[in-house]
Image 1 (tube, rainbow, N blue to C red):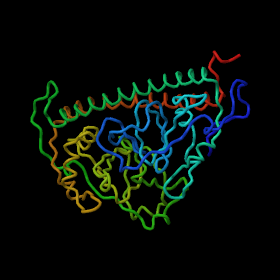
Image 2: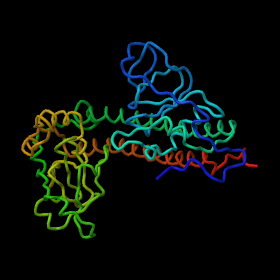
Image 3: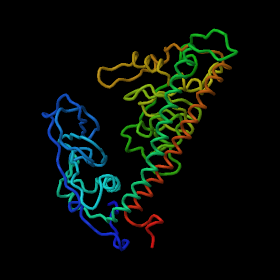
Image 4: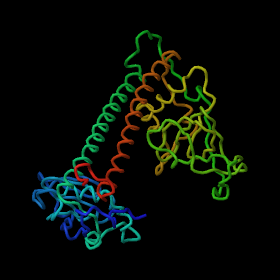
Length: 385
């Protein structure tokens, strides 16, 4: 759906204009010009390296010409762009900062002109119409949106710091390098297969013949349903008919699943009943000598993840075999110490999740303000007459 960036009923001080009438568009150079130097170089993937010559010195807004066309960015200073980017300059009746916000509100995918690699043309960008307020109102709109940007940036920094702290805690507590006060008992070496029953998932084939939209269908969990960083599985996108159960593995709330191919070795705790395909290992029937939350963090630790890499099989796509995972040796403390360690790490995770939820709310607020302020739906108080 096309993003609305122009409205018929705009404030009387505003005007309709084409982007080509208020800015100039240039195209970056190819890679053969790149070399050592002090000027940043940007491509569609972000910062690349530096060059010893200057393309433009000022305030620019860049957007992908080919490839990544939906992530414009603002830059102030000397800039060199590669040939997969357009850059804007020579602004009339507007500023680069304001245009950068306008660009972020455009559904660039709608303007894609290629069936293969996404691409834009200079003429297409120039022809896009926007509703343009006077410069003083543009400046105030930018100031308001930057307030939200700063809040998002501050939360992002806090989240990054919390994650570093948590990583350090995991390294110290899960390896026994640092013991919690009151715990002195030696840790025990135990095979993972002695802590739970490990089995491999399976897939009825062809899977399309078993998919269903009926409510009584069984949840069908795919790798693509999982978001990086999640601890728990609460839902699946698809279901299969009950006949498919003969060819797959059913897991229940409280069971672990472990990805055994592609991004292998990542543990998740089930909160629902679901069937898993052969891209998963199921860890069920946890023994009494292992705390569920502690096991999650232990399997997530860098130490165990490195072990998974060393025991993975396959010259192309690597995967984990049930037998090698079962034989993996873990050093584990007593249940009380496991619980105490897991509580500390869970608290750290909860703090990170709370900050991420807050950031998401502010990002949604920013998106709402962006769409409404630059289209004139919402006016700032000092511009309402």
